[in-house]
Length: 243
Ligand SMILES: [Zn+2]
Image (cartoon, rainbow, N blue to C red; front, side, top):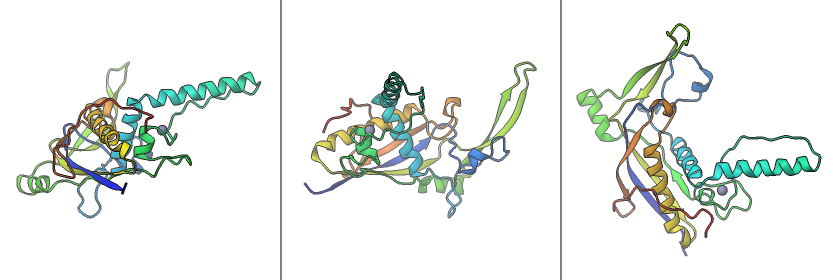
């Protein structure tokens, strides 16, 4: 079969302030200015494709139960080593799956030499829509907001360490585009369902930083496939190994 490339396009609407910072974000703990990442050409914020891709991938890994499986495999391996009289050394960090075989590795890619085929998915950078740009220039829509975050001193009951965090404001819309390659006919439905599931999970979760404090809720709008047909965002049952 010839290579087939599928497309999913739509909009991401910000529901609660979104913070995706640049690199210096992590270095400037306690810094006053904690800006969001912006497109150097337009000066408008954007959502890097890598951020969206990473989030979709990690949600899908959790959905199929991969992180705990990886941790259990590490624990088992360590136990075996100790039984052989080697020292107890358990690295409990769990990064992305790299088995090369599971649905996540096949769709999102892996560096495993036994990988079935190259990475399927491409997630483009998401830029502000023309409609939002128009609302910014004509209606002065506030597309950025500043949130002050404090810690509460438990004894004095007072706020300490105020941090100013910039966020993309609610109602701002970004265009998004995902392409995915079908190398094997058997993966067509599987990949479509996996992407539909990851998008649905993201709507229930968050994008960017500080999600447990309410940041980064988003919703997908007008999502269509390469034929212009509605692409349904819903949680599907996935066969993790398969194909
Ligand atoms: Zn895998």
